Amino acid sequence: MIQTSTPFTRRPLRNKVILWSLLGAGMVTVGIVTIRHGPTTSQPKGSVPLVATTTARTGSVTTSNQVVATIAPSQTDPVTAQTSGQISQVLVQLGQQVTLGEPLVVLQNPTVVGQVNQAEANVVVAESKLQEAQSPLSAAQVASNQAALVEAKSQVTQAQNSLQRIESPASPQSVAVTNAGQSITFLESSASPEQVAITNAQAALTALQSIPVGNQTGTYESQLAQAKAAVLSTEAALKQAELSAEQNLSLVQAQKTAAIQNAQNVVLMDQGTVAKLQASLNGSETPPGQIAGLQAGVQAAKAALTAAQSAANSLTITSPGAGTVTGLSATVGATVGASTPLLTVSGSSLALTAVVPSAQLTASRVGSSVQAVTTTGVAMTLTVHSITPTTSTAALDNVTWVATGNQTGLRVGQNVTVTLPQQSARGIVVPNSALIAGGGMRGTVDVIRHGVLSPRTVTVVLQGSHFTVVKGISSGALVANPASGAFGKNTRIRTYGG
Image (cartoon, rainbow, N blue to C red; front, side):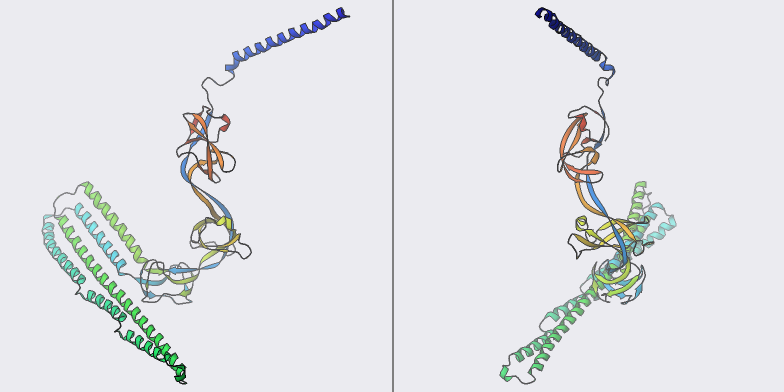
């Protein structure tokens, strides 16, 4: 049995050896074929992946949210002064109906008016210089202009003398200012009738108050009340006198300023005439470069005149819209500054209201502007009028916006979609497609240098819908877009874009 079984056990062993040998040879053969034919199925030598790129830049990312607001009844708008001045006219009354652009209050400000006059004179001078530079004169015109130049110089001297007289302490304007100032000083002194009246009234009150209780008569309380009233009355009289004196001082100071400004304008105009005549007599042809400079001077003078006229126009305050005068604090003779409230007009603008989560109002402030669009596609700019907590929960706020621009087609009850800014951050901005998200506020950006990918860990500052502000790379860095981290670190690539 042993002999019979031995060949049986050896034969399979020999067969296994032969089989493994054949398999090994086959694998070698396959490997040789793979090595031999590999280059024909892979990328050519030196070929690398092609990756889109973008350049990181310094900028801002702002996130936003949208809420639906409803147009509410008309809003009450305060009307304020646009510049300082003294009220000369109040053209409306409480309860009066007004229209858009209707004049409401008129201010006077001699300085602003003087600036317009000076700007007009500057335009005349600039245009005269340009005209003379472009228009040579004949012999007869030269002779005429020489005589006119002598007269113009004389007028300049007279205008300068007039200005000096107004500025001198002895001028009527200066005397009026001095007297007004002395009146205020006298009112504040103990010798003024008002101060004497106050002193006497206070003395009488003190005398009554010092009477012992046992010596007080039946009319004591009445006398004491009259004495107190006398003190209040004399003090009120002093305040009224001081107010009148201060208003008089402001008025005479304004009159002196206006007189000086007018005299200065006359000097400027006469000097402009002299300059014009002198330029016409120089007898030389003006170079093109100088002509261009004079033309630029004319444009600058006209721009300054437009600005001065705009300031002068703001002295007439108009209604911001159609409505009713529901508040009126402006009085003739009062001196006001820029932004001083003068009156209110109800019904001059539409209001929009909505209940908004407080977390969505982190970037909204009273007076800030937001963009909105109606259901019919009309775009508008709104101003935040008020933000107040709701009574139900501190997590919600009642928000009111005001639309003061074109309100054509808007109606009460109409819905409007308002875009609210949420957060804003500035830093290095990359597209979201270039960012490989990580844990928490971490991420990875593939920076490309010399055609090689190099992943950089960055901190996410703020992520918007399309771009992200990050920290960890510098402005101008070339990054893979979209992110190409699948290629691995130090992968050599080809780039396009960026």
